[in-house]
Image (cartoon, rainbow, N blue to C red; front, top):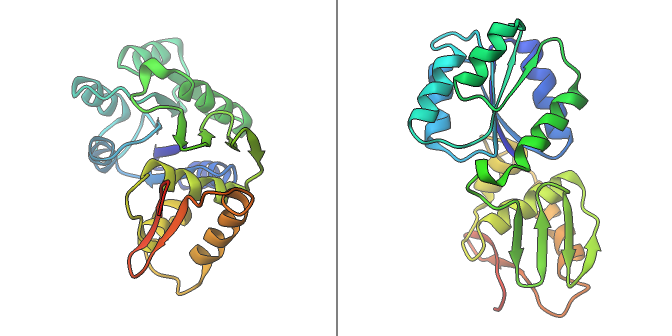
Length: 225
């Protein structure tokens, strides 16, 4: 799941980002409301988490602007404003759920998963498929030819990125950004190591290779040579 968190409190944002990344999700975090709105307009996310009180632009107006622009991505308000009128304002503005601080991470995760299960709110499929390889974004199960494959969170995210870009070349830089949130080259073999592990699980037990190295460019997941 790819999540955009628009939250200016460092303790809350650190807690949420750490928890979601440990669950294998990718989180982009912005502190400023105006920057958050621009990012939400420009990129595709599975769920948005938006605070109400933000510098630059407050949460209600962010959500109203997104809905006016036709954005249907599920939005969860995460805020200290917990009155009945506050909740009503948030839902009327276009929010899909409303969670009041302080909160438990397990409840936040359950609410995000529930929002991601609403296909009428999301244009993207929750199940990715290439040949006989299938990945379910909600149950987080991977199967090939009907056999379930056990993946670690980073391996799952790596496979998700490759499958979302099936048939296209995904560069090492893109993988570092989308899987590890590195916006610089750490000069390690982390990508190559995880690709190798993924091949061992996805390709080696089967007759057809799906993960291909594109020399000098990156990797591509597709059927055939």
